[in-house]
Length: 169
Image 1 (cartoon, rainbow, N blue to C red):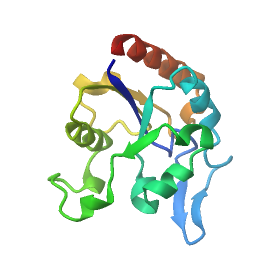
Image 2: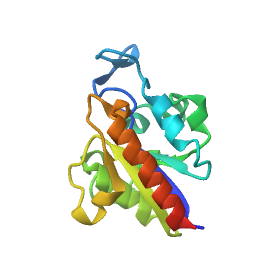
Image 3: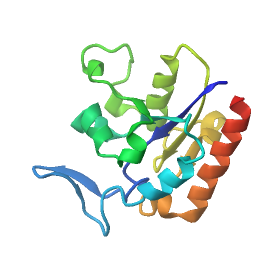
């Protein structure tokens, strides 16, 4: 069975994309609260305990992997196995384009290129810039103001997770 990965962005997916790093920490400058749409992700992943999450969010670069993972609800933390950004990237990592100048797809593609096994993968993100048509079926794109609160997006996530589960077997 192939390992299954979900590349997860936070802003525009788990809460509105109106998040800023201030002296007080991470602040949401929109109605609601940080991670307010996490219950929808928890529900969607309930039937997929084998699925592993890779953080594809700038939170890792700004806060570090541990703090970014700890920001998630406890129900999701145990599934997180890594991130597209690593602190070693600032010390001569082999990628030719600096991480923060890459599109989200380029960051994910670089992560996948470092794996030594085939995987089934999906990404959920509000940013579709740079996604080639050949990999567009791996992206579940959210509206930056609605994220996973959009029922159609959540339904698409559930459908694609079930599909990847069947193919992975």
